[in-house]
Amino acid sequence: MAHNADNNVMEPAITDLNLKNLLLKLPGSYKNATKHFIQFLDQNNVMISSKGLKAYIDYLNNPKSNYSSNTRNLYIAALKNRMRFLFRLTPSYFEQRELERLRELLSTLKYEKIIIEDRPAALKIGEIKRLLEKAPQWLCLMIRFLLMTGTSVSEMLKIQYLDIKQDKKITHITIKGKKERKVIIDTPFMYTIAHFFNGNIFLFENKNQSPYRREMVSMSIIRLGKKVLHRHISAQTFRYTFAELLVRKTGKIKGVSEYLGHASSQRLIDMYIEQELTPSDLDIVKL
Image (tube, rainbow, N blue to C red; front, side, top):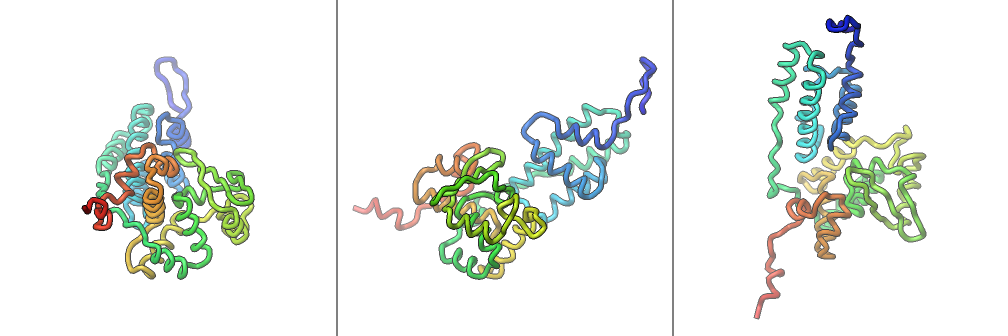
């Protein structure tokens, strides 16, 4: 208990749980990123402290975590924003030396530069076939789903049967990410997935009746790419491929962008679409 000298009343002491709940209730657009931070602390049995913050930063910086530059930058921005709120709302919780350590750790966090030219190239049809031929069946089905829907691994693994509506030919799936949207796949393929994974709650459910871990799926894709294609690919490569093929087929950049759940179509233009003209593209101007 903390003592209030002004009214001689004992105030409840702030606990680590109070701080975590406070962070989760803060307004703004970082709710999911904040949950990610809190879940990491709880899973590793550490508090909101310099020790916990350093462990989280080390985790984000570890290449094995396999976060894209955009995702890592989002988590960094959320962490800096939420900790600043915390310092302002609970000024007496941290001792001065601990506060200095926390601020020093936050100052070391640097955003990762995103170089558009280095984005993963879209896969060719032949490469896709080779990957599917060599992948174990569970991974083959996931890769096919990613290529057919343009979803991310995280979005895919969160799909529950409650999110699915189907008829004889087309299955509609509600994707509950930052921007809720619907994707479609053909119903026979949906039956194939459901029969293989045999889940009770999640579409892609493991034998423990839990969704597959994102990190495990992502690393399996990376290893498969190195083994079969002898180059680095990631789950995001399938999203790039879906976007580029669909834009080339339809020419509907805005429609594809909305289908992928982007806030604006500019991101699709900058990150996914190959803009260089090929010799065959220029055939049209021959006289």
